Image (cartoon, rainbow, N blue to C red; front, side, top):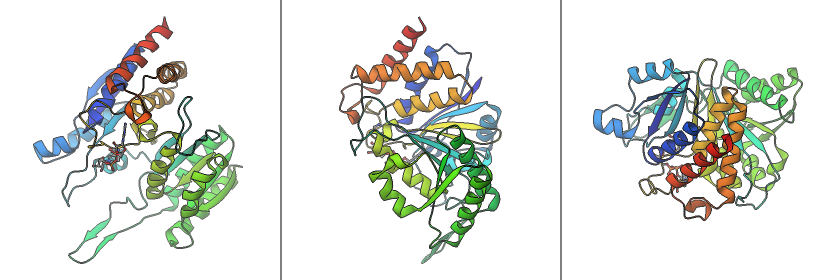
Length: 332
Ligand code: NAD
């Protein structure tokens, strides 16, 4: 396996090495290709990502990514949006599942849902105009884009509880009428149970009744916001992994950003990055190895090897070392 490793900026430089240490404990035949992207690179070279970087990413079997800081440049083009679009990774998968031993803000753990976010269009189409007194961002929803994300969500639902919740704002946005219609038709043709909710109502329901949902499918911006919010249900941003999946490429990253407020202090929670690496193993169908990572992570939490966001005293490095050590023990 040829793996592009992008640490990025801020805590990306701390949580990705921890995830790699855990992956290395599995002793898999992985060729790691480090790729520098982001704010640091932009400061040094004037460019946060180059065409050569994109080529390197395309040549690898998949990508493990930390997070990057957005440079303070009005003309800056998002690195993440560029990668997702160039590699056509249209499905952003964000599982929201309680971890044993950790309680989120609502105190409940009777839910297990996945947010499937369309990743290449919507409000993040990149079609924008900035004038002195007015600025425009074009929200693009296509039949093709809606159909393929709806199909992804339905296939995922088939392997779970066969239920899809379509989240939209079609009472106000005409573009979402198309999204909703296509999602309904797709769910119906896949024989998947479906229901739809307005995004504002969904924000409320996610907090009050997260157990109502199995697979949630939504557009780009709504998925981005709802998944950060949903992270609070499971104990915080330090715990939620994600995958960006396309026909040819896949990219795994924690949901959180570069967290400049804690970067360099060695206290970032590496679990979201470690679980992203675990999603990568599952994508490669290395299910036994993925299970080892889950067991080792639960062991570390059980032994209170957790970072301050979870009320512990452990450093990022220590959590990575304990989980890696446990993986080695389990392998025997
Ligand atoms: P953030 O996710 O970086 O941080 C939000 C809050 O969560 C902060 O208080 C932070 O300390 C905390 N947090 C995040 N990850 C944590 C972890 N692993 N352990 C413990 N606490 C954690 O969001 P932000 O502060 O809005 O953004 C910071 C920078 O990151 C910005 O430049 C933003 O554009 C960028 N960003 C990048 C990505 C990405 O690369 N995927 C995603 C979101 C934001």
